[in-house]
Amino acid sequence: MIRKAVKMLNRQRLSLIATVLLASLLITLLSGCWDNRELDSLFIVTGIALDKAPDSDLITVTLQIGKTESKTGASSESGSQEDKNAIILKASGRTPLHGIKRLNFNSSRSLFYEHNQAVLFSSELAREGLKEYLDFFLRDYESRMEVPVFVTDGPTDRILAVDLEQEQSAGMYLARVIQDLSKLSPYYKVRMLDFLSRTREETVSALIPMVAAYDEEDLQKLQICGMAIFKDGKMLDSLNNYETLGYILAMGDVKLIGIEAQSEKGHVIFNTINLDTKRDVKLRQDGGVQVKLSVEGALGIGELKGFNGMDFPKVIPELTKMAEERIKEQIAETFEKAKSLEADIYAIGSEIHRKHPKKWEQMKSSWGSVFSNIDLTVDVKVEIPETGKSMISLEMEGASHEDR
Image 1 (cartoon, rainbow, N blue to C red):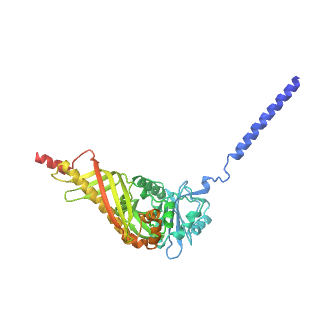
Image 2: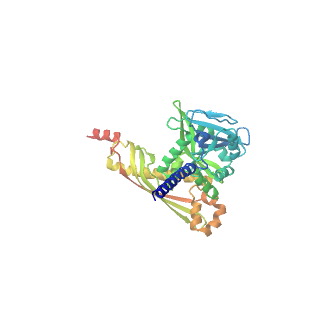
Image 3: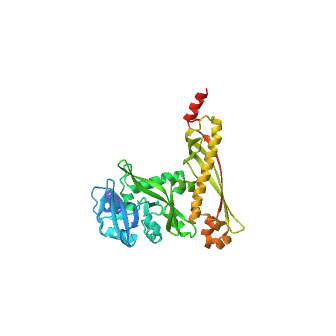
């Protein structure tokens, strides 16, 4: 009996040991990823740019690579350009994919796109049309459709090669800047997905933020300098920052944006606390379109100069009038520019299509002409509940002491 018990105990121990060994082996084998790639075998792309190649019909693909170590291990037909925080790779080809394949062929590392932060198109390429170059971004498995897109004022490689003190790469910097701007208004941020969607709509004109590089006191900097206007996939024109704000105000959902106004009495910069716009689109009997924008909001005073000799209770109505006139003027100026280009950046045609599908079919083919003759009415009502720490300007304060 004792011998049988010992044998049985030994069998149980052996069975337990075998189970533990098997489990350890399975954990070791299954814990790895089948498509795992080591960091030192990858080039992590943080920016992609397309531009026209000089003196040829090819396009230049520029990639910004996040730097993980000092040696690049790559070269291209144009070589690689190392800056302080990133590596710049360039190659030319008939298509974006052709150029990228040439980079892959001459590189000891694989290109990894899942962390890409920005896609840039040069204004020169954009004016010729971008539709034929978008197919690559639609088909590539690693392309991020949520990545923000930009049009560059100047060569794209100059933008990506800018060495910024506060960021590791221009691609990461642009992604963060546009994310901050989207907190002020969602219409500042345009993703690849948004641009593709608008490009497919025949009567809607897409907008893409524009970026420019400049030097300031021996430092390289980037700035958003407006928005490019697209129609049928081609860049028609652009809005400067002032006109872009007019578009943003017309679309509504605005937070913490500065609005500057000036009159003979003084100068003021308002900070929007909140501002929204309601739009009413009506079809006229003559086949035209009437658009009414009703803007309501609350503003704070960011800076106040002038208004000499005026009491504060009289200044508030004056400031309210200045703000309302400025907002109305800015919206109207941008709308007029869009009309002159027959570019429906406001997607008014899409609204008519949803609400009046039968009428839309009749005017769809001539929408550009119809849009250019839209009657626009803008009503603005704002309040100024906040004045900051001081209710008066220095000039008003000085005038009050003299009056005493």
